[in-house]
Length: 167
Length: 258
Image 1 (cartoon, one colour):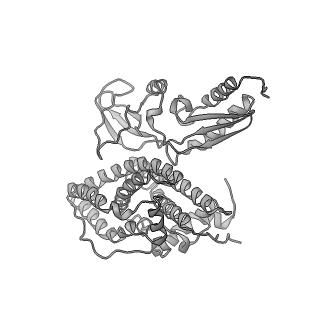
Image 2 (cartoon, rainbow over the protein chains, first blue to last red):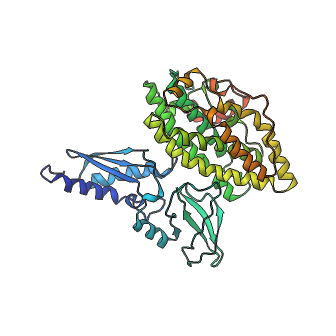
Image 3 (cartoon, rainbow over the protein chains, first blue to last red):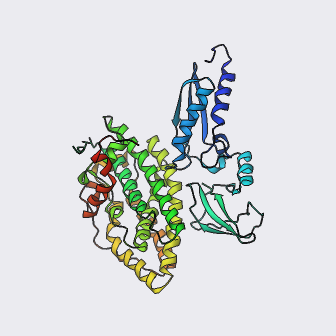
């Protein structure tokens, strides 16, 4: 039970921190704050509403993430937490934190390239292998094991790797 | 007792959202039929991923249609409890998968349109539709790139793949005109800056197609007679078979949840 005497900003920070601790079930090294999926936390008394934005329209991880946010907030003492999905502005990989990019790389997934500017129909990309660091890589498939990834291969170490695609 | 059809009060806005939702759901379902059957693992994942994006778009649009209608319907009822004549999707999208070339040509025709359409819809006065458009536009652009690469690979590939790709283009061409048609209700939404006139995108759509098709050493047919009817519920025989599979669980066990 949260006391109303606690200053609002501290309480909100506590709610934010609880929500921000939830990880992506598909990429467990990233929190939803790292991903930029966590957009807002609004307090009304001791009721809390969290706004999240989907990465891709059909991403099945979103249901799981919403449920885990509710659980995390209840554990932190908030009653009847609510999760709201907002579509606008549309999520972009530009919202991924530097920390998130670093963690992805360490996990073996090439992080999204910095800009989401609209490229030509067939844009050229050059990725560095997250395993051996070689720039001699090639695209295997535009689509990977989840909506947000593409499948690449390193020609130097011969290992395949995931690329968190720019969106 | 099988579940009965729902009734939908199709105001212009409800109908607008339903049409786009049905487009996304039916094409998404068609693509999902490839799951486990695609010619290679990468394509199995690609087509399933695209299906997932489309079904996600359909969910947003159905939810919005239900909200705009303001009755007892929701996304599941709209998807599972309307019969063939109540479906409003483009005829192009319900056409059977055929061979791999036919699936990719269908995808190419639609993605080239959807990419332009959702980009134009991002400035709709309707903030929900504008938000759905902003998400869908990014996804469509990626789908278009994937389909375009395949059109080039198939067209400029072997004699066999070239012939199949050209046959698919010739076969599906008559279903493309419907993408650019609007009725009176939709015309009013266009005047109110809620919808965009798809007819205004036709020139740019043709430009996208021509560039890819010529690089693929294929040819677009001369524009001729175009098939219509999907937007008002007159469908080809294929949609009923598709719906019988898509809806079978909810029709057999009404209200069943996982």
